[in-house]
Image (tube, rainbow, N blue to C red; front, top):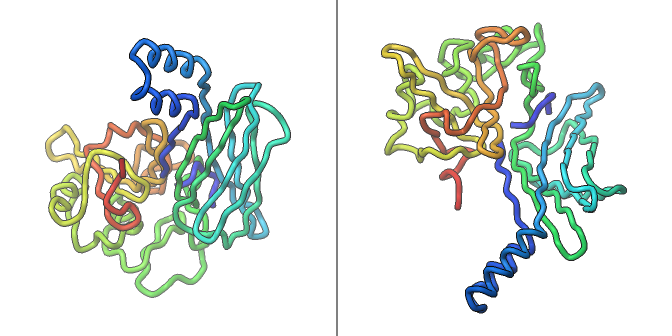
Length: 283
């Protein structure tokens, strides 16, 4: 897992008093229901969650989860993934940062982080779903083939040592990286990124809402521009964490290199699901 806000997620919150108010609304007179809902709303509090991971020497990954919560609450974190479940308590009230060392062989795929914070009989649970394994700032994939190391026959590698097997697209382009992450789409999509949504329509699920593992497609406004495509690594509060190549350059990540950055979810023209994204977001 690289220094990152992990590869795409979705954050949700559930508040106990508001659930109770919703259940009782159908049984109480309208004024009483409104009063109950108002009281429940006054008791509610917000919990926000941020997750990152850093590759450490010695095949160890340091996972950091930060929960922002009122100073009067007590929080517990549960981490779950394939063949993994771990609960981390907090020994202090209010906002807390958990740090957990996971082995390099930790499960791949989507992880779920659930912070449950309580204040008396009231509680709020905040979920964060993410695919682990990508750096937040450096723009390089954790576990990418080291420079000079042997690569599999037919692999294409960029200047950072990011390699994909049997990826026929031009190395370093956004389409090369996207199909490297989603090889199941190699026979579906073609041409510039701007054409990918049209190519996927009717062949694989697509839509306007993000999902971890989907491809975000950006159709340009300027005629003739190639567009852009990126892998959705995380989703949180209307934003998407994108893994891609050939994005706008930064001092630490120039053209034709792998980047990771947050963007507004609505800024994408659409999302291609399938593969790890399944049929897309579920209500």
